[in-house]
Length: 95
Image 1 (cartoon, one colour):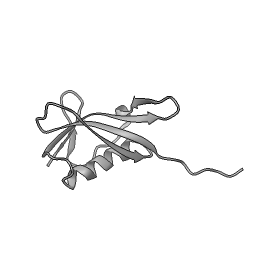
Image 2 (cartoon, helix red, strand yellow):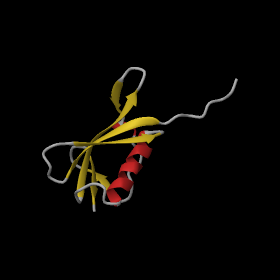
Image 3 (cartoon, rainbow, N blue to C red):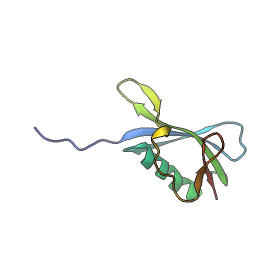
């Protein structure tokens, strides 16, 4: 039997740019939540987020078999440089 390559999952990053009232979503295909966070960091650093501040509320993984989103924010081990947690444990990006 042939060994299959691991397949990436779909991740949804729920964040609020700047002082917006509403939350936004960005979707990434990644192998884990850490990689999805790095993809969002790349998106933020290259100016594709419309604000100089972004607060991540959750990172969710889509389970296609159960048709549900599961919060996997707690699995983040290391934050990129210049990124920190606020007093409510939300991940905060600033430029």
